[in-house]
Amino acid sequence: MTSGSFKYKGKWNSEFFNKEQPLVLELGCGKGEYSVYLAQQYPEKNFIGVDIKGARFWAGAKESLELGLPNVGFLRTQIELIEAVFAQNEVDEIWITFPDPQIKFKRTKHRLTNPQFLARYQNILKSDGKIHLKTDSEFLHGYTLGLLEGKGWEVDYAHHDVYGNPHAPKHVTAIQTHYEKLFLEKDKLITYLTFRFPNGH
Image 1: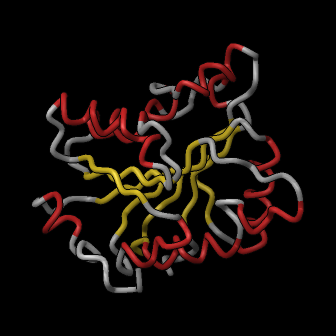
Image 2 (image 1 turned 135 degrees about the vertical axis):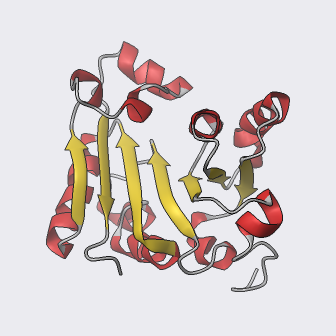
């Protein structure tokens, strides 16, 4: 796939959803639980779950069809190719839910919030677009916060124990993935962070 060759690039709302409304991505969506739940809660937005393994989001795609949700879809691709399938300023929000934290230093390039990935997201996000990161990894939460502080990016909300915070956003705590429930049963803390780029782009 080369940049600009994907048929829906720049046309997701007009040609895939056939409705112009805010476009939200879930990167590394797994079974697509968040994409389906958010699509149900926010019919005024369009959602796309993205994962490299179609078998992972098959359940979410099946459920969205059974529920007759017109505002959710799924895309099988590498996140490294995100700029080849979405146009500049096409996306309103990005969710990153429980990615592999890639703790070893040699795996830094694979962390979904490293500077290279953030630059890709910035390119496809609108100037007021925001990114949500929900993870059980205190390491990834802290790593990402450090990057944002160093770049001067605007943090809207950050908490190391989102379920222990009574003021946590409802849309963050109302849905739990299969693995998230397992983490919580083991008393693992779930962190949440939402941020946007400084002064737009």
